[in-house]
Amino acid sequence: MLLFRWFHFKVVLVAGVGFFTDAYDLFAISIASIMIGLVYGVYLGIKVAAPAGTLVGQLLFGWLADIVGRKRMYGIELMLMIVATFGQAVSGGSLSVNVIGVLIVWRFVMGLGIGGDYPLSAVITSEFASTRTRGRLMTAVFAAQGWGTFAGPLIGWVVVTAFRRHSVHGDNFIKAEVDAIWRLIIGLGCVPAAIALYFRLTIPETPRFTMDIEHNVKQAQDDMRHAFHDRISSDHSEVEFTRIQAPSFGLRDFIAYFSRWKNLKVLIATSYSWFALDIAFYGLGLNNGLILTKLIPSSSSIGDYLSRICIGNLLISLPLIPGSYVCFFFIDSWGRKPIQLMGFTVLSIIFLIMGAAYVKLTGGAGTPFIVLYCVANFFQNFGPNTTTFIVPGEAFPTRYRSTAHGISAACGKLGAIIAQVAFSYLTYQGANDAESSAGPKRLGTVLIAFAFVMLTGVLSTLLLTETMQKPLELLSHDDGFISKDDVRVGERECDVISEPFPRPTLDRHGMDNRQPASRPGPIQRAAQNRPRLP
Image 1 (cartoon, rainbow, N blue to C red):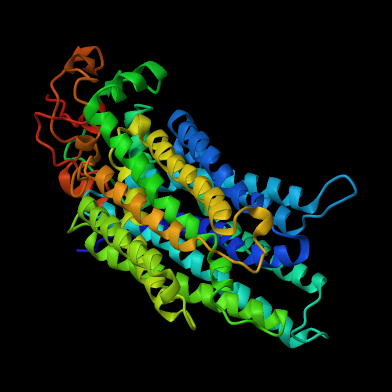
Image 2 (cartoon, rainbow, N blue to C red):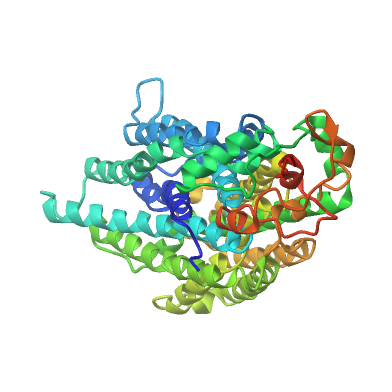
């Protein structure tokens, strides 16, 4: 039996290309900022702007996707990313406007688009997946982040190498050449986003949103037939569709739902876990170039120096890829919670070792430090970096799924912003000292602090509910919010039936409902297949 149908591969490809672009645009700045610093000087705002925009985008697009639908918002965030990425590549200054100020504005706008991609891609993938393979499908989408992070330094190395070979100045680049290099690296991020745009604009609305929120079962069936190129059949010649007056998105219902501890604790757990993870993931990831600057031997030319920075970033980011695919194979057998607990625990130990023995580990070529850094990146993706993306897309009801995912992800970006500011001032004793020969004197202390934060992530993970192999309807904890009296067929009250569609059809199309009939979920209440007896 195939794990995924062709439409599932399409979802992975379309959503994955977006995540590839997200990671490329976010983490390419680790290299580009070195080049920008050589030309214009070092500015903290360049690194903080994108995470700040991402935070706003996650909250805004997460909320809008629950109000107007996933399909209507999917693609808009990609347009923002394309325009803003191109804007960065052609950023210029004037007598009254600094080029850095323009660049910061464009990176904030790009962050808005990137932020929208998180809840939309997660929720769309989750709502199209079957219970049996939902974890793997979402992991496959998120794995594209590792490829995007790896592609940044790879493209950087290719561009730098090309300039080294064809520059009339050889390895001794002039400022104009360095300026052109970072613009090319950033600007190429438009290409994958443009490729995916058409497919995002034409993807159908998820069946769960159409039935749970819009209460349009017929449209959901039509969308499924179109998406999967086959017929969603029924054993009956006539089908009566049941509709419900389920709670819609609203502040009062939102407060009522999350005022219950069993619901609130899940949101707290997903939000804080992501917050803790991103403090280290972005705190280090966006500063790879600066960390490597202190480990790479001095070079006689700018070209050689930039080439070594790119190669070092390649080595550090490479373990993210196998980490994602190891997680892919275990996510639906081990479970989300055990993998997240393991990841946070291992990262706590690794960061503690890296921080406590920083001076010894970075002696000479710094090989032991680089090796530990690579191991940490492996367990980032075979651990909380993947699971913090998956769980919020599963653990909440359809009407708040995107909003809750956006809140969780935004907490992560808040951690990223705090990490950038703290990393800059603790490591370099202020942004103005970033170029000083003293270097990151306090990096060991920062790593120890990261170890402590990872340990708090272990504690927040304990609040999570395991979501593996559980239908979204059971995980939503909707009991008590939709009563039997809300379920009607035409003008007649009816009993709830355990399955709206035949089980084989549901399992194929990602809508299986394996919960007992005594605990029906929104999809079961929203559509009933009932034969009309003669």
